[in-house]
Image (cartoon, rainbow over all chains, first blue to last red; front, side, top):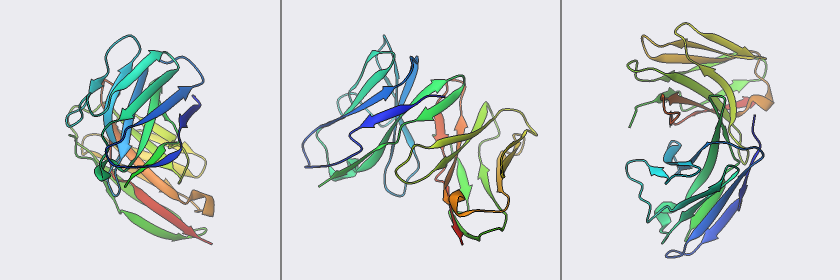
Length: 112
Length: 111
């Protein structure tokens, strides 16, 4: 398994600002993912972040809005840029280990 | 975007009763079906990864079945306990490990 921590656990932000979410894993992993769950919606994949390469984004998500860093095999950050109330969501990172995905506890973001 | 549907959206169960709910997914290009349990303010917990048609998996009082030809999976909870209260998510897994989630079934077990 994998133990994953995220910071911050929750935040309330003003529209137009940016927030960087950190994801730390207790072991080295190649593949990391970022998901979000908007209120009343399903968990949706934002992007895949592999160490040593650019993140690949799913349809509807762009790098300018959600820049991702993956500096090593245990850490990644997701930035939510120029926030609007529609960005209010739970953001989760996950890692792939032996064909299973393990999730962090999430960051609950409210944009006012 | 893959269409993964779960029903019902929510259900209430009396402690000690058994229950089950459904996940439906595209039957073509099947790779894997995942079940997670997600309690508020906690990480989603992996329950099962199912890959073969007819697969049945069990973890304590929770079990799951898989029918890839017709595109559905059932999750069963036997003798529900209050600690089973959570949202249960299914996710269709592709061969590049991306997950497409259903909206979840929220189970509330009444003591």
